[in-house]
Length: 290
Image 1 (tube, helix red, strand yellow):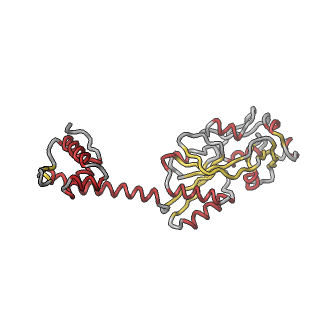
Image 2 (tube, rainbow, N blue to C red):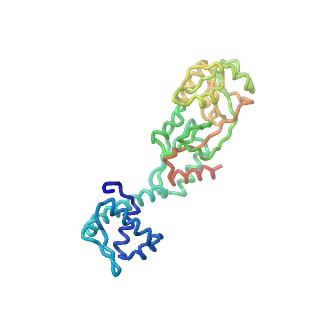
Image 3 (cartoon, rainbow, N blue to C red):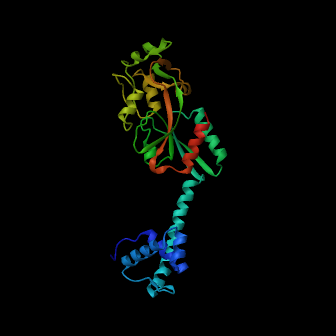
C-alpha cells in the first residue's frame, strides 16, 4: 500500500539492481534468490505506487521515475551507511575518553588497572571521578561516568556487573571514646545492635542495609567524610573495609576488625545501553590487575 514505511532491505535491493540491471547477479550479491529480488522490488514499488524498473525477456532498465528515485536515494543511503559505520567504529575503538567513577577510595588495584589501560590504549584519555558514598549508581545512570567501581551488592536491572575484586575484611569505625575502641576485634552480633551510620538515599534500601546491618541506625550521610565526622563526634559507628580504614586514618577514630560479617567487595558496573569497547577494555584491565 502506498505511504507505508520503507524497509531498508528493499532500498538496498533497488540500489544493487540499478547497478547490475540483472536479477540473477543482484541475487548473488545480496545472497538471496532471484525470486526474492523480485519480491523486494515489488514490495518497494507497491509502497511508492509506481513502477521503478522495466523488465523484459531481453533487458532490465530503470523507468524515468526509477532514475529520479535512484538519484535521490543513493546519496541519502551513503550518508546513512557512513553514520552507522562511524557509530560502529566508535563502539569498537579504544580512543576518545573513558570516565571512571570510584566510590570511597581509589585503591592500589584500581590505580594499577587505570595505568595498565592507559599504557595499552594511549589514544584514550581517562578521567577519574569520585562518586558519592550514598549514590553508588547515579553517576552511571545519568551518564556522568562511563563505568564505576562500587561497593557490592549490585542488584540493578539496568546495570551490568563486570569484574568483582578487592575482597577485604570489614572493620567498624568508632570514636576513641566509644566502648568498642579498646577491643581487638568484634563479633557480628555486637555490631548488629550498635548504632551504625548508614548511607542515605538515593542508595537503594538493600545496599544501605548491607553496609549498615543494625537494628539501631544513626543519622544517614551522603559522603564518607560526613560519616567519619559523625563517628568522631560519637554519633554512631560505621562499617568500612580495611583499605578504606587505612586510607582515612585519623586520631579521633579507631577502626576495629569485625568477625562474622561478609567481606567488603568491589565491582565494576556500567549501564546496559552504554557498553563500548572502551568499557570492555577497561574491564579486561581490571581483571588483569589483580
